Amino acid sequence: SGLDALEIARQEPCPDLILLDLMLPDIDGHGVISRLKSDARTARIPVIFVTAADAVDDIERGLCGGAVDYITKPLVVDDLVNRCQHVLATLGAA
Image (cartoon, helix red, strand yellow):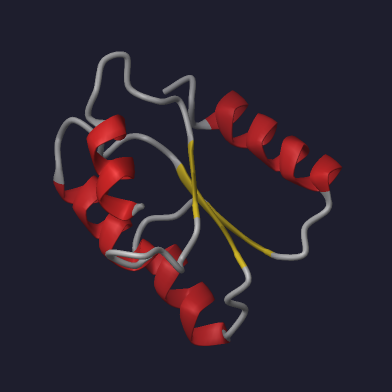
């Protein structure tokens, strides 16, 4: 759930990367990323949306909300791994 994700992200050690869906049972992914980015403890954790929501508005809102990437389902696992590695190599080292 989104609330569980927020709680886990605030624990030490914090995650290096968060894969986040838009469709969650309690708060949606947009709400989660908004809370992550507004909290100093989690603001620098890169977030990649991995979701079936492929509307242009969702993609734009996700990226403008702070996501470093947006991947729609069905996904290709090798592509997901490569994109995660890229984010970790570039942003994760910051």
